[in-house]
Amino acid sequence: MAKPNSKPTYKIGEKDLEEYPGMRLPICLCLDVSSSMDVSGQIHELNKGVHELYNMLQKDTKTKYTAEIAIVTFGGNGDVNTIRDFSRIDIQGYPEELLARGLTPIGEGVNKALDMIDERKKQYRKFGNSFYRPWLIIMSDGKPEGHNPEELERAKDRIKTAINRKSVLPISVPMGTGKQDPECRDVMKALGGGICIPLQDGKFPEFFKWLHRSVSDSINNDVEAILRQSLKNAVNWSDDGFFAK
Image (tube, rainbow, N blue to C red; front, side, top):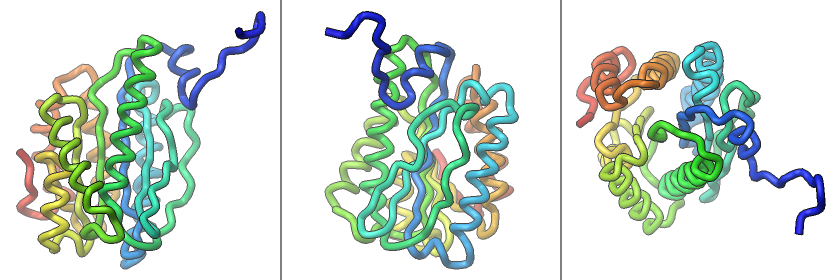
């Protein structure tokens, strides 16, 4: 039995849901930090892009109190790490610098991201918070390595189910050498659930600006209609021939 006047115990991110019961838009960044990301300074550009995304979301009155960011990284020897759990963008500090090392366990990373999204939705329901469809952004520069093949297949199945139920909005972004690798592109197409947009080399700033605008415009609007329109502008940062249903 709880002691009289004792404070309730909260999981990470729950107290804010109780104190601020507004609409939420969860966005999970699932990011490749394998050693190949060190090539041509991609990890540096990714760090700058994530930092700028935080800036843009915080300065935007539509997203400042609505958008919630979580960051999952995959790299190392099958490592998957939670860099940030979900919380409102206006109360988060900037994430730590991402370092590149190891292999590419992308299936494990996507499954962790989906688990976090599911848990956050349970918390929303627990505290009576309404929420928009969660976004899942998957960025990788190579084919899966150092992974459990069963985890990758499970991730593909979960993405397919989420698409059919409209419970998650996945967008995959192959980059670097991965854009030219058929296996990488096939995996990213499956994980993107129909939205797979290769990133032009050096176009990280343009991508994250596009992501901010798309997220902001989707608030109080039909997200699928907004995406159809915003994808027309993806040519500013995406390679020709991107795949999007």
